[in-house]
Length: 272
Length: 272
Image 1 (cartoon, rainbow over the protein chains, first blue to last red):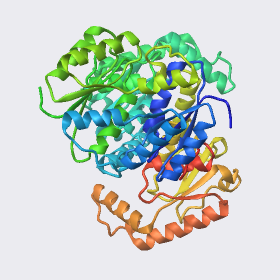
Image 2 (cartoon, rainbow over the protein chains, first blue to last red):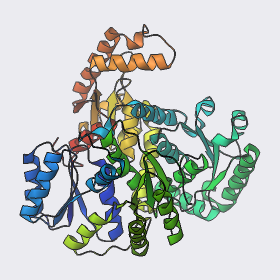
Image 3 (cartoon, each protein chain N blue to C red):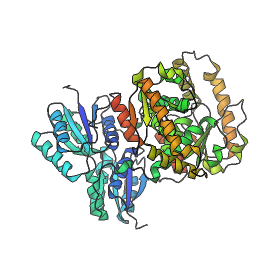
Image 4 (cartoon, rainbow over the protein chains, first blue to last red):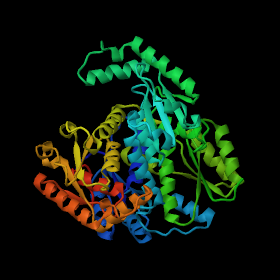
């Protein structure tokens, strides 16, 4: 048994939502590391007894998503008896649903991971994004829901994957001064295109780091400020020609930029 | 104002963790649709007053992740005054941290989205997975943390992306009877390789559907049972030669297969 602060993430399914919530909470205690241990697919009282015993003899708490009422109550009761702190991440919200919407839960684990239509749409979108990454095949531009354009290191690829995971078909096209962008870029509906820009200073920093990680020095043209300014100017001219909205990705995480893109497409409401 | 059951997801950051939790809960009320509306980056009392007013006059509840204590208390108080149900998704767990670990939160929004080392590792892993998808470049096999092998439609690509999102560098190699697999596949450490198989019936179903979506008939060789059995036998022989663990992906969601892969690599504990 370790003495390190530990959170046992217990779930009757994969436990991914629970893990994310634990990470979100842990990030609020920055600088104080917490270990996360998973107990997925718990299905009987013995599984629960085991994890409670482990928690009892270590510096730990339990965070859980268990939808089967019998198991949930057993966990709460055992935790209480053994003096273990166990936090139910789902039931407060489930109870609110029942109270306000007059709905009753079906209490079946694994409902999030159903192989339904939406699931296959997501898989298809991911394959699409991989296929049409980095301007590999121009015909993807017509089929795409969203087309991202930008110079190197403006997060086109991770953004495409992130949006694909939300079932959007995304193609991305790199803009390079020496290469004429595909003419199809100017004939697709401008409203499905988004341009990505970044501050020259930030890009300089990112590219210098990247060269370093590749074992090259920053004297390479790729990371020179002159070159960066040339690329950015050229890219902005193309974006103006397309007439698409432009997002500055400097100091933004993928999730934040994606959120802005979805706001542009009216896919979600936001105060931002 | 609509009369449809609505959940307002309110956050002082993107609100993605909250959204996932709301979806997990909503999936427990299957067949009863619930609308989700986002209010991201709330930063002052006016934002909160607005969303409470909206909630008051509709059939809705609020689910929130707000870490600034002043805003959280204001929301709780206003919701109470106006008779609106507001569920705090983070604080029960945050309080458990404080109580058991003696830690104090820093109460700064957006801590999850920090552009830290882990973040850049994730971006790099995603770019790696795109680059080395579908056996595109054999040299990726050496650099990869995980190498997935399997025949067409065993979820290699979405699995690679999913694991990349967890910062693992993943390469995948398609197995096709007519094409000799790259010899490098037999010289990499066998413990970083995972073979994916699927039941012939399930694969038949998936491929027939895929052909249909491409506007082709299922009489194509690709979806014939004989062809499928030939491909599976050939793939299993290669996997045996590599000596890698084999996972059956039939009826498994990406998250579930990924969970099994990570368990193999001892990246997480699991009862499964």
